[in-house]
Image 1: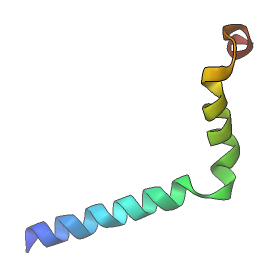
Image 2 (image 1 turned 135 degrees about the vertical axis):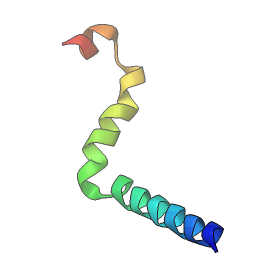
Image 3 (image 1 turned 180 degrees about the vertical axis):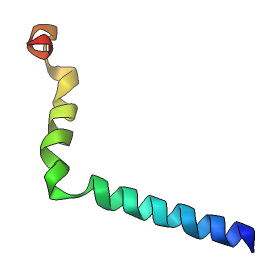
Image 4 (image 1 turned 45 degrees about the vertical axis):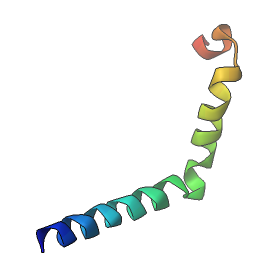
Amino acid sequence: MLSGIVTAGLMLLFIAGWIWAWRPARKAEFDAAARMPLQDDQEIRS
């Protein structure tokens, strides 16, 4: 019984995290993070 409750809780947390990550409002932040390895060190420090 307890393992089923824990599994359901973790599944809800996973779905909530997935929804948070795929919200359109977060796209600009994730795009900027994806470009960071390709930028020069001077651009990052500015």
